[in-house]
Length: 248
Image (cartoon, rainbow, N blue to C red; front, side):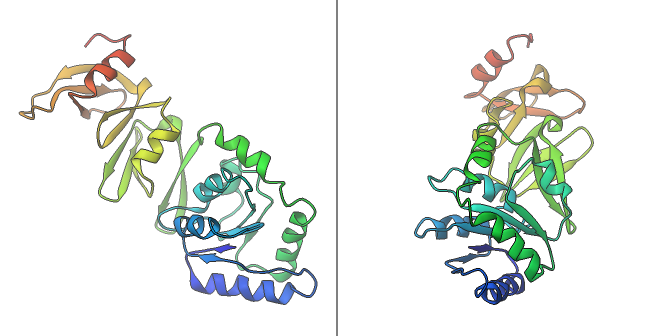
């Protein structure tokens, strides 16, 4: 399966696979332009190898690789990316291989030959990765892939189709859902209201809200930033109990 949001990149990989067929028989069973479509495609067919771009809209290649590892029979993953190796290493993903664009036929052949004897080789490393949350989040900004240490994130706020990750120094836009982030980082973050998760360790106190909103009587005070985040009435008992070391 080829997963890349750029049609010319998919075409090149398709042509390379056809050129390699005499030496390495293969069948292209699916193509997708983002991670969500890739997951839908793989649900109805067997895929042994996934050639995945890293920078894609909606769900990037890193997130897709993690989701694929949850399958009963996960495909081997080969990243095909315009980014240098550090981006992959930073996520500690033990994928079969990664190729830098523009991909050469000989290099692709070498990568695929690593898969042939051990089609299940990716199941253990990626499955192990999924048992713990990621150490970094990814942000696509002006043609770059930025890595944000989760430990530095103070809060995550949903706004329309994006989520804002706030660190002490700046904000980053993430192409992920707040619900998915809560499921993955539930031990580190707590929900203040329907659109905000805050790192538990950054809460330094509470104060009465000056707003007339009946839904929010309390606000969370956070370390390193002056912002106050409203806490919904529904979440207040849970937030208060989780911050039992503080005195509101």
